[in-house]
Image (tube, rainbow, N blue to C red; front, side, top):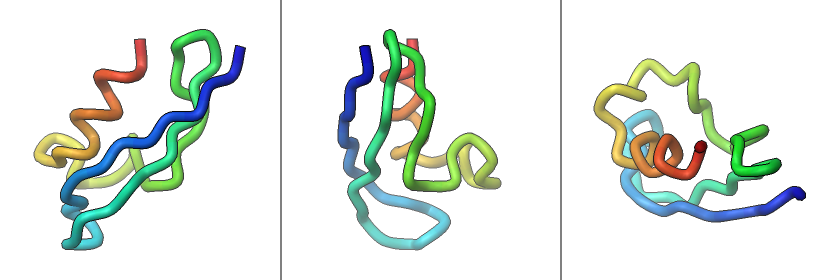
Length: 56
C-alpha cells in the first residue's frame, strides 16, 4: 500500500525551512522530493532525521 507523508524542518542544503513529500510503500521509503539520501548534509540535517524515522 502506498502512503504519502510530509515532514517539515530546516533544510541545510537549501538553507531554509521546507516541507518535504515522502512516498512510502509498505512502510519503506520509495521517493522524496529532496536530495535524501544522497545529500551531503544528511548526517546533520533535521529533515533527513525525520525522513529516516519514517522509513521502517
